[in-house]
Length: 219
Ligand SMILES: *Cc1c(COP(=O)(O)O)cnc(C)c1O
Image (tube, rainbow, N blue to C red; front, side, top):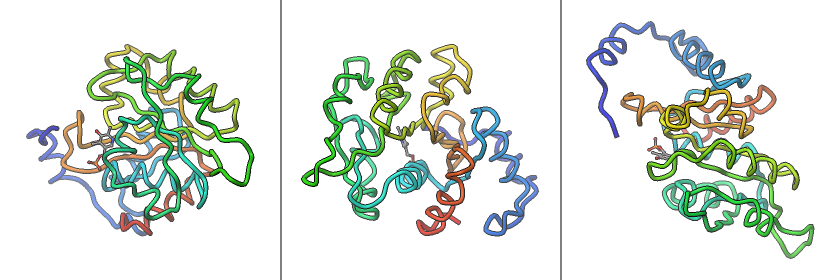
């Protein structure tokens, strides 16, 4: 939890502004472009909070009756008021995390449901990094992604403190971002902004995620 520095306050005061609803806020357009480029994704969407960013991503990946496999101590499961279930009819399937706070392949595999009308449809693996102040090694993230891919699951990374993780892991933003299809980065945590997040994602998901953001009051 951080407060805006003097530099950030003056950058805000001097920022060129427009109306993001019409896509004509030059500062937001630039911010979205910079984050997307740094993370090696095609698009970026400014979100009013990390919770809204994760929720928009989950609702973009999953439809009603589908489920998200997620760590049982991850923010998406314990700290977001079950928004995906409440607003999207999406089930949350929590799994135990390892002592290093990562998701291991065996537990992910065991949580994936069979194609059986009794079960929800497993659709998304939601990862997190950092988790409770710990950076999860890149190798673990890559393994989790490969396991997800084996079961045709999409992947999302709640990277609220994404840049703290890349600093600790000494890797590039693109390397960590490559571990998931969509990545949410908070501006309001280690980066010191008073509010906001950016969701980085492939172009083909971008319109859908923007529609969810609008519906979630984030325009
Ligand atoms: C803070 C945080 C979020 C959500 O951010 P808000 O902007 O407060 O909604 C999501 N995930 C993690 C891990 C966080 O620490």
